[in-house]
Amino acid sequence: MSKSGHSKLHIAMFPWVAYGHFIPFLHLSNKLAHKGHQISFFVPKGVQPKLENLNQYPNLIQFFPLHIPHVDGLPPGAETTSVVPMNQQKYLAFAVDQTRDQVEGILKFIKPDMVFYDFWFWIPDLARQLGILPIFYVVVSSMSMGLNTKAQTKEMTVEEVMELPPGYPLSTVKLKPEEAAAMLFEAEDFGSGLSFRERIRTAVKGSDAIAFRTCSEIEEPFCDFVAEGFGKPVLLSGPCLPETNTQQLDEKWVSWFSQFEPGSVVFCSFGSQSVLQKDEFQELVLGFELCGLPFLVALKPPQGFSTVEEALPEGFQDRVGGRGLVYGGWVPQEQLLHHPNIGCFVNHCGYGTMWEFLLSDCQIVLIPEIGDQILNTRLMVNELKIGVEVERGKNREVSKESLSEAIKF
Image (cartoon, rainbow, N blue to C red; front, side, top):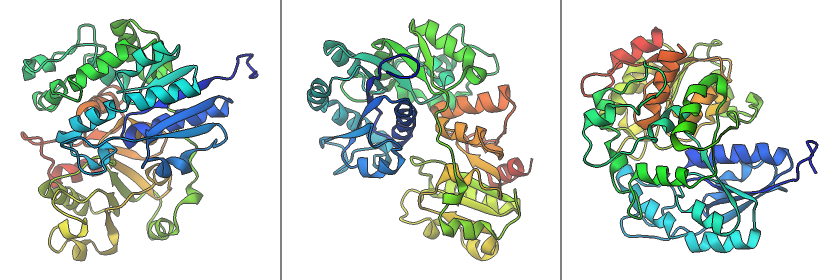
């Protein structure tokens, strides 16, 4: 029995096959394991080794590897969204749906009390057949989730997508035409005959409750809206981020930052899934050059390039010298945000990143690209007055001048 008098629970976790889902699910698992609960964590077999170091309670959190079968249209060996272009992710969703028999066999064997899941739309039916409580765990904002209370079809126009659901909170949250156009993909097929939007709606409707990794102080009106829209109780876990220790930074980062004054470095990261076009990449790094401040830009190589170095503008490295670093590998973003020499953070405003920067002392510059990033930015800039959004041109392009101006604002 726990101190509160409740029995310890056995909880299964089914995050979607993306690192932006694995990590928040694992953060929640660590919090639950800290309370003494047992966790069975389902991931593609190739992902487990990359998550082991984030498992703070290996005696209570056990990984269950799943074999994601190959289907036509997928790159060989693809298991996660990080190696699958956006226009091929419907095939990955279809491949994931082929794991149902594997999942059913394991759940029958381990017999958990409840299951937390997200885009696995068939988990609720399977869970109920086995006497397991299904809870939909949302890794995006409740503001974004609120849009899913409204169905979206292929026949809908941009203007119809721009219309927010009736009763949607806060009038300052509005979609621009070009932003709504970027969300039309949600009506396209996304595995097993469902659209992306309907996959989410089906998964939510099948749940016994919806859980958000947020708090009422930030998103209460939207949580209430989702609860009413789907007719489900809503549970709040808080951001569930681990404590950060900057002393664990690799020596190469400690050495590089030591060249600069506290609060002087601009840090940019767009996450593990963002891949820019060459012209977008070059305009972005030229914006950092133009701002005149020390900078660290951590981005994947643009499309068609194997390294960031070969994609840099001509003469760029000679001009910036040691003042700036464009890095194409993984960086410990959460730890870097707590480094005293970083004063400004440029990012897409993904939901996990949003919580990381809210818990830092950095000034925030936002360049949202798709979906929930756009709504998160509206919440930060328009409602909470946190951060600056970079102005885009009529074709949604970001110029070096607009980026530099936002950084120096």
